[in-house]
Length: 176
Image (cartoon, rainbow, N blue to C red; front, side):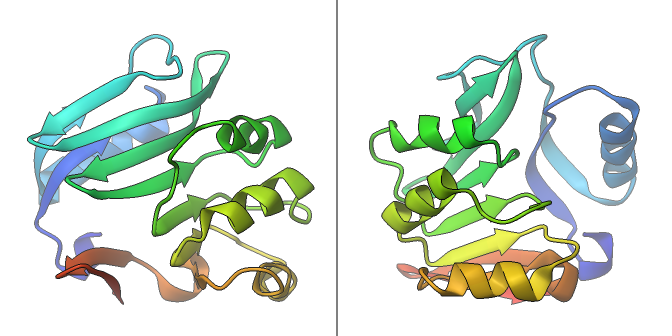
């Protein structure tokens, strides 16, 4: 983030208070102006909503044993889905949620292939961009996703930092 020239963040949302997360926030705050830091409750529950400015919120869509596994981050009419776990139960829960359309979806690393519940979820979502934190097996995962998705597949391991913004009604991105 700092190498990209970013100097201001509206919000940093902590999903846990372990050393890695807390240390990362301390480092960010040294170099970047952060308007809001949302610390987690002891336990997350589904339907929890955290507000960090006018029209800006984070909704917990799926939580298991107090940990958030899927979030919707929204600002105004725009929203992104952030999925922290590829467990089958996460996508089965998401499939039951109404109105989850989003132009932008973030997914974590996949140790193995893409499960059927995730495929069904992604097909129904019709996202414009799919951002993956995939570290290996990239050609295999990309090929599998391209076989049934029209979304642009962006891999953090290839692109580095990615910034999304709206130009009018159109969602665009740039890399750093």
